[in-house]
Length: 236
Image (tube, rainbow, N blue to C red; front, top):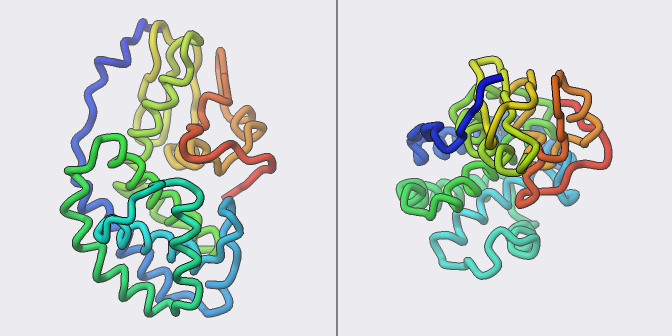
């Protein structure tokens, strides 16, 4: 396989405001089209949050940015407080609050530190699909949010492979090589599966069962800053 220097892979420029706006639009449509019963379902791979709890976290993240509540940002306590503070809010109230704060946040995302940009968009993408899981509404697996999240997480996977060699990922829209040195493994899967695994929505058993050639290193696919791998399988 070719010797690949991952540092020479050019990062793609994205319109982060547009990506987040698209997530908000799709999630709003999901919530407005869902029954009250379905909104109480627990979303997979969350801290036992209902679908409305997931929405409360997404809303709270934008409100906290604008109102300056950033102590402990991205910690479990920070996110749980967002959910707890909105535990009695109706879907309409949550969407109204999001509609006030999100348009203020969206133009600011490009000014966030690069790492925070990635965390903010990847987190929102993650929770869009957590909601879809709770509502049995799969979709948007080829969105610009998935493109961006794959871009961000695949670089992290390359870093985590360390001395195991580079990884060639062959996906539905092309391929990418990540990591240092000579490519020692090939993985054939979708970008959606990569991002769901990367944020702890797949077990290492699932990851190991993918179409690998060479040095698999399934643990390297999970980006620990988002979540640990699942202990049980999750099929979406």
